[in-house]
Length: 636
Image (cartoon, rainbow, N blue to C red):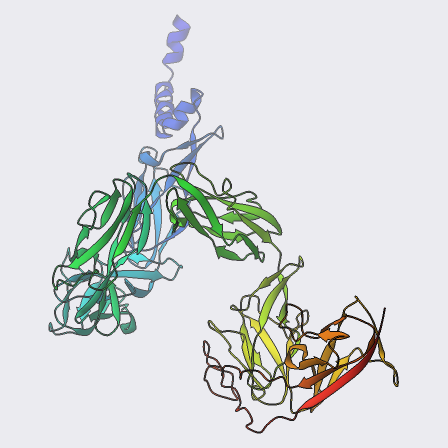
């Protein structure tokens, strides 16, 4: 005991113990905890480490603590946060940053207990506004009506369609006589039509001073309403199903806009369906009803415009058919399919593509989306089907699927016919086919752009409903070329085939085939027919088969008869009836009605798309009559 007292009494010992205790406390709780075996905090990291936002958008940061035993823990809620540039972005107590205006800032996080600061300071960049566009794209409004415009921003980080309607300031070129645009909170961008005419509306972002383009801000206040049409014009519903109708108004100046909110709706047979003030119709019982829209301001109706809608409430589905039934596409290409349905007790059919569920038998080869657009991913085949979700009825059950071939890439364009002779003034429909690497060929006549190497010889309609229609203008020869914008290939490229049209000059001779050896007769046998052929040669060397363009005759019909194509046999078809010698003759040209003139256009040039060229004037001189004959010895 005395020893213990003596040690305790040593000078400075108690002070040393007290100092050690204070040092342990000053080291922090983690150090003290470490002596008790608890892991101590070694660092804090924030994520993400870099982010770009547009004004108004937010970003939540996450704080992760690392401890001496290499364990980690989310301590986001325990830290305090600071933005080094609060004018650019602010950050709240939960670590959520809000972008304010373009610029850069860093985020600093600190543990208030230990005083530990996060090792990293994430950089937050607020993107710069580059442009403003005004929506909708079509900006029409009636006098007395309103149109809500939206200002959509595009930023330098690629972000688009950021709604800045309530941020920008709105101005108008009008002095309040044609239309006004509101810049008041709650109604910013609201245009009110006053009288017919056009104004320019401009949106300006106040910080960057970026303005919308004047060409994008044209708003037209329409004139007098001329007519109304109901859309869709034809629709089928089952009992209990609904659909939405729209009223489309046609105004002076060929302007059309949706005026659904300005009309009253009615049905000719209310027992079949109901329709509310917004144009929403519901099927009630089987039958047909007319849907009529009447403009509340003018009284003009879709009925008076002969443009009512027809709503049919139908019964059981009897068929579901996809069109086209067969389809060939290149890899990466897509095409829209259509689905058509028929119903019990009805002879008509209805478009049903928007109501079915689409599926592909081989999604790895081809996928089809909810609207029926099919896309090829790789070479192969797939069956595209449609299913009515209400009844489970499928296109497969009625044999109405689409057989799809994904044929790889287009490797060539083929023009058909490859060669043909066309008389002056006559027309010929040329065709173009895409050739795929798989060997498949698909008609692309209406998708290519046509041209003639010699447009003064042969003119051809380049595009439109009559694309590929060639007209012979004057003697000569022209190469017909098809360029395919979709594949970037031409029939003139390697792997393709052009067409060649020859326009003959004056006919110089006509010849019957087959011909006997010189100085001999042809041989024929009773009961064995012979197909004779006629060929004409024109000035310039062109030749053409003219079986149907000559008059055929027999010197002795009791021995042999020859057809002119009017007895069910082809022209030149010869039948031998009994032994003897007979002469078969031809006369060119055959007397026949004059051809119907081709539609008018500009001779000597490739016509405007959708029009037909003008043929060269037909010579008024009487053509030379050409003849030929062959003698046949008929035996048994």
